[in-house]
Image 1 (cartoon, chains in turn red, purple):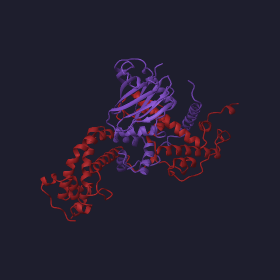
Image 2: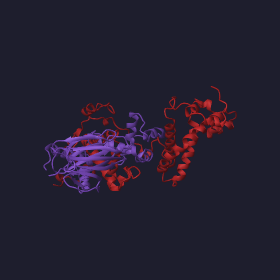
Image 3: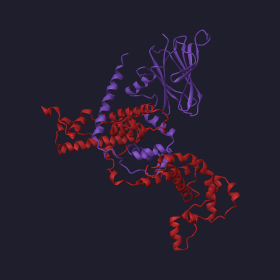
Length: 305
Length: 245
């Protein structure tokens, strides 16, 4: 496909979005001017937008000018909210992110979406691009690019033991989240526990922790908010902190008390479900308490005697 | 009133389950609670917050967001608040499609909030605000001789973005009748509702259509305090009332 000659400015404004998109190139090769010198090539790597063919640039600008005002209104407050503390100025963060979104728009938009298909919702596609760019920028600032594991945070992948008990899987009628494995653990905790953990007991304790983590993981697949609530409350033990983290006023414009009530509802509902899931493995509170006591070095009554 | 046996048993089981989890969580170290996967890339995340990710990918991001405070914060910032509330409502009620059920503690908090505003259907209050509702009209047998209702109260209440008009009535045969009309419906979502005893036990469960309309009759209802428990996408309201003696 050749390069279209630029139309008069008025002509672009008379075209529909679909017509403008059809004017765009299908590939990068088509989109950019040839680079003839090494200096051009170097510059292209840093600022490819300078090499976009004029006709495509005109069409891109027309599309940008049409969609930007509405999307900017929608996205600015969100950018403001994800501004990292390290940046310090949410207004300028949002402004910078919008500038970056413009560059991403003219660099990335072609006549087809990333899957090579026609845009089903161009405005939605551009909105996604805005969010994408904004989050990337925020992550760069805090030094935690998404998709990369922080060394400090690197933990073992979820063990295969995370599989649900077979009966439950069948009841749910869903495919298992990981391959099925034997799920029983030695539950004669009283016999296992001593202040010095034996290798057998250590294994049992690790097994128990793996099961608890597995149950939480499996539950979190369909319950991200309530799981976040339970994990936060178990760490913080402070309803105000947990409520402000899980359900700030931006989400629900109600008093702290009303929001806390909802958060407690989430917590209690999850406690019941997670506790029930643990019980399906035959784990009882007595069992877990024994391990806790052993782990913390608390003397059991029988040993005091 | 004595609790039914099955309810008591279920409550004891619930307490045991809660103890198991409490104790289990305390076994976990801070490292155990960290996410087991890296943060999703921003394009995936941008699609996720709009609820447009495919099921498998969505569940995978769910699991990450549940244990990653940074991603959770970004989710709250980038998703529409209504979508977050819908997710909360879905999670709260996922185990029981309708009606919403609560733990005994949660129900006690609801009761603490509403017990000052019990509408006695046999009494006259006059129009005006009464707790969570606006009393629009009241009728008695003298005013509505040809109606099947002996007594009725027309109330108005807002839940989320919607406003409903709710008529609570006592029929001549003593049955309880409830008619709900969507008065101002901005969110075309079914309002889920339950008629509960003061203990939280559900006597009747139903939902409106997307226009907010439904009606039902309960032939036998107890004369102690009852609660009309209304839920709409994470928003809720309760109306406490009592049948006339």
